Image (cartoon, rainbow, N blue to C red; front, side, top):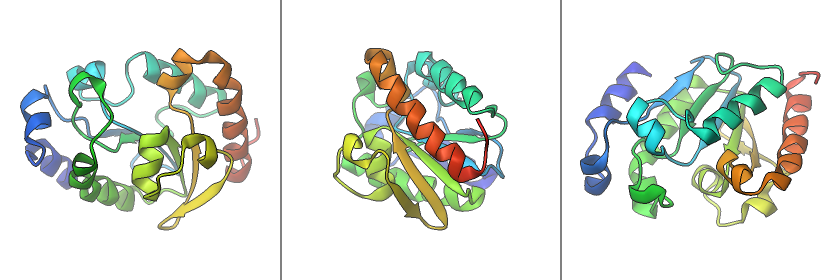
Length: 182
């Protein structure tokens, strides 16, 4: 992971993103985690700190992780993109393609049993599909040797609190599959 992190830090493949970033946002957590939470891209707070999911959405993700009887130290948290898109826009296909070797190698190094895709962008990037997050939820997928479940992004929950119930149902499915009693 340290080698990949170094490559990410020096990457300038996406000239616009590289020029606008404060720093890259690689990933954080247990490098031998059974579970990886996989998000879209860093926001302003993440760009400033270099740590994924530290803003309001990250605080909500922490609560979700803790509700699953885990801590951020038990899991690994990372994003598709390692640089913040301007205005927090959705990652462009060429940006995803440029970061794919990094996130694929990260996942291979961690070798998680489970991946939870947070939101449509992460799910589409990982699973290489165009299906909506609503259609992807509640279904199991495979990526390499990992079992994948998709759910709504915590930032979506901040805008649509009623969807928290759906995410909790997804987390209960995931924890059951992981053998964790809630």
